[in-house]
Length: 317
Image (cartoon, rainbow, N blue to C red; front, side, top):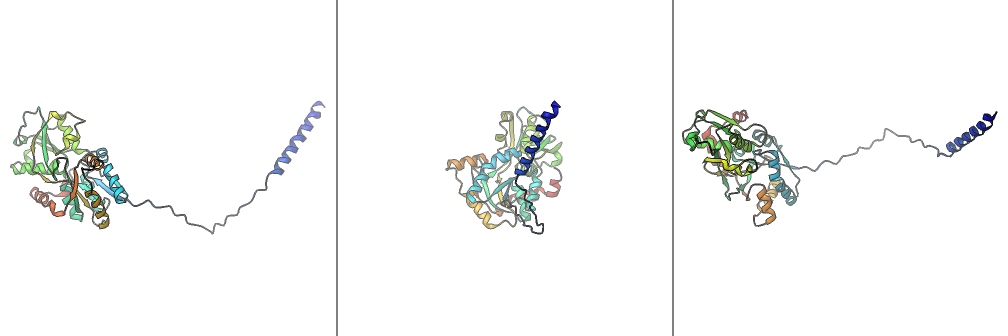
């Protein structure tokens, strides 16, 4: 009886509260959707970018650090969106230019004369850190290697080169050997630096570690690796004759207006401007000057002497 006396009022109180709560809620509106009416939403397309690639003579990290500020400068001054892309090999770089995937190519002269066959055209070349518009290949060995003191001592030895399409890192030195009557068959072994990118560094490091008797590299590479090894333990056996320097080329079909604007911005850069000098120095150059396809005829003559077949060369990577 006691429980009933107190339980009944409690039940009535809860029931009243529930009725009040639900009756006080706003009436839910039913929204009817007509699926026959549709509106297409357009996602904004990304702004087209001009692709820029540095032939992968060094690691992708080095390529980025060297040219990132230069690309930012060119983008800012030209008003174009420019994006750096990173081919893994010299051969991939060549194919990407031919396929229109690289708009602006920065490459060695040997690679240039190959991409020129597909319609790419030189429009600028660099002044090397030495102050010259030309560069050389170098043949190096360890300073404590007493068996190699001159070019002829390389006969019968193991050779690590940069890449079959590397100018200073293989083809210029190969031309030097042939000029002295030394054939490829005269070496015990010719190998090429493995893996994507960083091939110049790898060639130096392989000789430094004693894995090969000598290496061929491009002029200026020893300065790039001085933070990795003691370059005082490396000696230069010989240098090739100078050839026209690294070249900027536009792929076939790239708008002349784009090329002319980028050229204008490049040629305006000066070592007399501290900010621009810093950008050029970081990119491994002292300036950018005009270039024409005919500037590289001497390189074409060398490729003919070497009897180069690019498809065969590319297949040895």
